Length: 126
Image (spheres, rainbow, N blue to C red):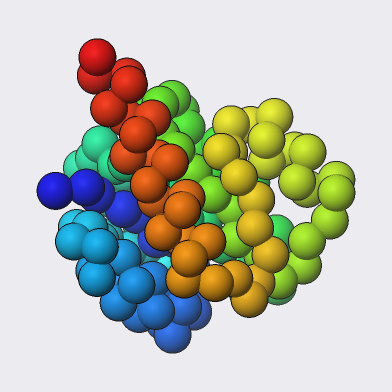
């Protein structure tokens, strides 16, 4: 079973991801802050992580991305934001995000990214 980690401070967003990815038979774990994200990540590996950019009006998404990539350099991660900028997109990609998407996004976009992450993991395993 594929595994996904959702890191967001909004319960409604977490529940939406759980429902969407649950329909694709993902095992979904969640975290609402950087400490929880690190703790949950260490229980991985995860096929994909969806990380919100802004937590309580602070742009912590890139910090969280960096921490999670330190734990698992092969993690396929997506930064999700309602406050997209070219600067943060470039930073996210440089840190190792597979993508950077603007809210609101479609269910199809989530499925496409999840499928890409699963394919990437399969290639890594040989």
